[in-house]
Length: 426
Image 1 (cartoon, helix red, strand yellow):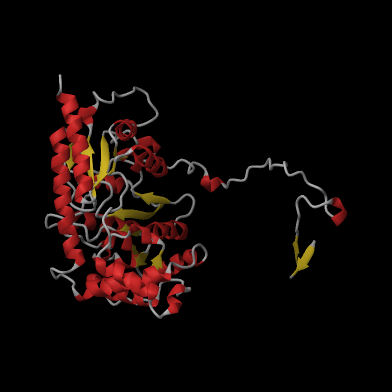
Image 2 (cartoon, one colour):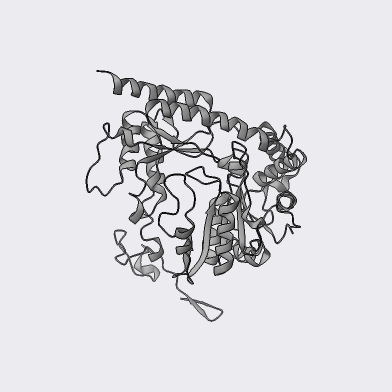
C-alpha cells in the first residue's frame, strides 16, 4: 500500500510469485461483478454499425451512408498539404483546446456576418471533433436525468405536406422541458424549416424558457431557391441557442471530423467544461486547413466562384437525377429541399418483401436488409431515426444519399432498372 496526500493507493500485481510478497492469482480468474455503467444500457445495438457492415459485405452501390464519394475542393486539399508540409512545425502539436486561433477567428467573422452580431472568437465559438461531439457536449452539459428534450416522440408533421403541426409541437413542451433539438435542413427528410415554423419553435422556447440546440450542418445544402434561416437570429433566441456546424458537410470532408459550436458565452462555457474533460483537443492541421477554407469563402461570399454556391447547384442536379430514377421504378420519392438525403416510399414493393405480422423488426429495416443482400443496393431505413415505441409509424420509407459521383448514381440506376424489368417480366 502506498500513501500520498492522505490517500491510500493500492497497487496489485497479478500473477507475481508469492515469494515476492504478493498472492499468486490464476490467469484464468474472471470478474463476476457487472462492469457496465447503467448509462450504457441499451446502447450496445447500433443500426449504423449494422448497416455499414451489411453495405461493406453485400452492396455493389452504397447510397446508405451519408458521405460524398467525391473529393473535397482542391483549395481545401491544398490548404491541408501546405499545413502538413510547411515550415510551421507547431501545426503538428497541440493547439488551443477550444479551437485553433485562426479557425475560431474566421468562424467568428463568418458567422458574425451571417447572424448580424459581433462574436468573440474566444468565448462565442468552440471547435469540436465533428458535429457529433458538439451534440455530445450539449447533452452532457445541459441535460440532467429527468429532464425532457423536445420533440419527444410523436407525430409532429402532417403526412400530407410534412409541415409542423403547431398543436402537436406545443403539446410536447412542459415545465420539465429543458431543451429542443432542431435540425434544419433536416436529416433524413431533407426538409428546410420555414420562417413561420421557426418562429413557432422560437415562441415556445421563450414561453417555456427552453434551450435550443440547433444542428445546422447542412446549412449550405439548400435547393430550389429555399432559404436557410438561422433560428438564433430570431427575436429572443440568441441567448438560448447553441448552433452546431460541420466542416465535413460544409467542405465535403467528413473524415476530417472538424465541427464547431457558436453561441453565447453563458452556454458555451459549460460546453468547454465537457470538451476539456473528454477529448480536450482537435487535430491542429485539419483545423488550420478548414480555417483557410473559410477565409476563401468569406472573400467569395455570395459570388459564383464560392464553393458554398457551387456545391448546392451540383447536388441539386444529382438529387433530380435520383428522384427520376426512383420514381421510374415505383419508389415514391419525397423531393428534399435541403441536405444530401432523399427519402422514398417503398409501399409498392411489398410483393418483393412481404410484411411479417407482429414482427419486432420494422418493415423498412427488413426491406433495406433484403435489398442490399439481394439487389446490392444499400440504403438506410427511416425507422432508424425513431425510438422503439414509434419505429412502426413511418416504416415504409428508406433513405438514400445522393452526394455521390455520377458513376455511382448511374450504377444505382442500373440496379433499379434491372429490378424493374424483373418485376414486369411475365
